[in-house]
Structures are given as C-alpha cells and as structure tokens.
Image 1 (cartoon, one colour):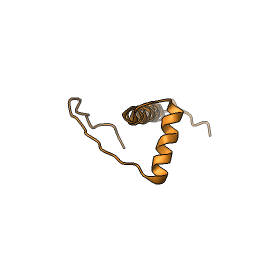
Image 2 (cartoon, rainbow, N blue to C red):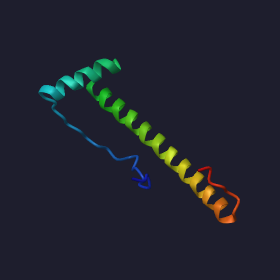
Image 3 (cartoon, rainbow, N blue to C red):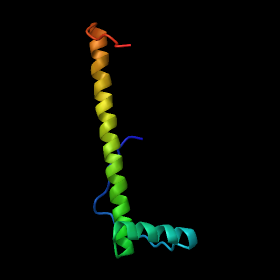
Image 4 (tube, rainbow, N blue to C red):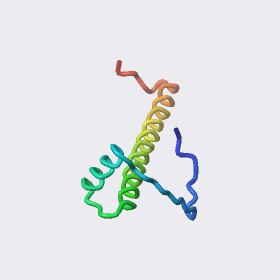
Amino acid sequence: MGMSQKVVMDKRIPIRINFEHVDAEKFGVVKKYLGLKQNTEVIRALISLKYNQIMLMEEKRRSQQLRETKALKWLEKGEYKCPM
C-alpha cells in the first residue's frame, strides 16, 4: 500500500468507543504501560506510534526502490555484476 493519499489536516474525527471485557482489560494494560491518565491520550499515542511505524516502513520501501532502480540502470549499462 503506497502513501499517495493526502490527509486532510482540518478534518475532525469524533470517536466514541466503549471497551468491554477483554478489550477493556487490554486497553487498561496499554494505558498503564504508556503511563497515561486520559483515555483519549492512549488513542492519540497509539495512532502516533503506528503512524511513525508506517512512515518508517514507507521510507525503507522508497529507499529499497531507489536502490533497485539504480542497480537496474547499472545492469542495463553492463556496469553491474550480480554478486550471486
């Protein structure tokens, strides 16, 4: 999945969630682990963590794609020898 979609920055996203049973316990563990007091802080922190992971994965993917493109150009010119 590429990150070609633009995020609308001024859009509000209201969320109302009720966690029950096992999900409530999981939420409590995460909240305590993160050391947060407010439930909304937990949601924001988790979104931030996941966003950072996605951005890192995308950067690695772009970097790999650039390396592959460069290697293909070298190969086409006869300047690249496969190490295998």
